[in-house]
Image (cartoon, one colour):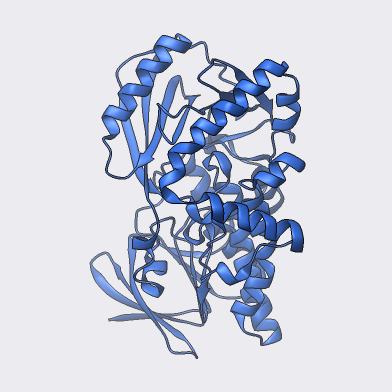
Length: 404
């Protein structure tokens, strides 16, 4: 069996991995990242980056090259649509943001981080001895043993690292199927400068559409166990009947399982011992399912925490949990009803756009939002969201006692 030694092993080669690797490599540590597929690899994602995520990429990796972008190359903002046919367009407060082609943007970022990447390598397990961690993997069919001081799990929502630490974790959280179809446009009155989202209980838990490379993406999310094609057909009919969207049959379908419950109710998982969990693996997911910006920032915090733990000879979990609290606030604030009502936690000003509606329209939108939220009732998130909102208001923080 081949043995590889390093200071840090990162599982995954995505945005969170790149940010963590950049901090660690810059600190002079020897870092290896594992990626189970061949790079550059495809990534299921809308590709719409937040202004905050865009700033991070430019500041840490430089200007984005053209090959990392889809057409249209930028997104101006978000438009909310309601069953009453009221639509609320909102520009991003930081200006238009890039429309990332994740296959190449992820590869560009991980390459510029300076990390050593082992692709075609699958994580299979780990053992934390306290002094070092033995990580088992398979690379091109052969067993590989990595002996390292720290591990970062940045391998997405169905994280194998999280499963290794907490075998029952996946069974205790609800999963949603998210799928997007790519269809050539015959006619599409939807503004291509915006990401479109529908608050419509009859369409699904998460319904969106936007243009990419002369095709329209039609996306839908629903609890696992449903029929993806039926859900899409329902949305396609609605878009044609209500918005005049006419599309050719789908050329391609992308789908995956997602979970965004932890960020709503402050139930993140950050690891234990010298193993850190970050990005979407930890539960970070912004409203409207933009996960790239919080992946970048939480990944950077994971890298900084290890660097600081080495420098100060302090327990890395102690440092990580103190530093990650800022990203928890940024992410969970977006789902916090008190912050939404009395603050402005998003990068598109919903309150200002909502204020432009007539009194009748405002009442209609409030009623339709309440109807939409009812489809989440089976998950019993309401009381948890409210209790965490009150804790945040009274203490200025979210309770770290809820984190794994």
